[in-house]
Image (cartoon, rainbow, N blue to C red):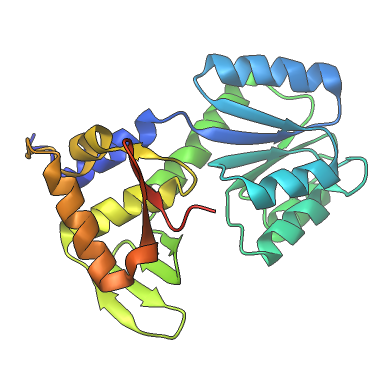
Length: 235
């Protein structure tokens, strides 16, 4: 089977450890889940109360959230609602002792993608986490980029003023790679492998960065001297 540049792009994205925000106030359970999830290759950030969970969710980039309900400071579903109100669409799995049908319906209606009751089976939980990450990966999302959004399916950037900017396939693939990890600095060699697998010259990365800046503005991509690029202006 022929591998396309987009296939290579997704492979490279998923080769990066998925980052999961684990929100659980039970210290022993949080430690156990951290060990299990880290053993599966995920990068885990733990929040022990709702206020911390809200802070982490608003200031960091995650691929999934595992969220208890009965939290100190802010109840779990209120945390999720506030994240959604701020435009944070990270898929969330509620893991709660509140497990009757009405509780599950409430959780799903208030923004969760999945709901698992305590006590739970570890293998089932891991399968549900994999499904959550897979659905996110396989969707055709709209990603936040500087001064607008990128619609991956149509390779179009829509600016906040309403202007539509068409991108070439390689321009879109490069922008998508950076937008999926907006806080990560990508080395040129990594971008060459993931976005331009049929090219040998790292200079092609710089060329397409130039193309994107010409269409989207210089601040769309930031150069990290001696390393590579990241999305947006470095603060």
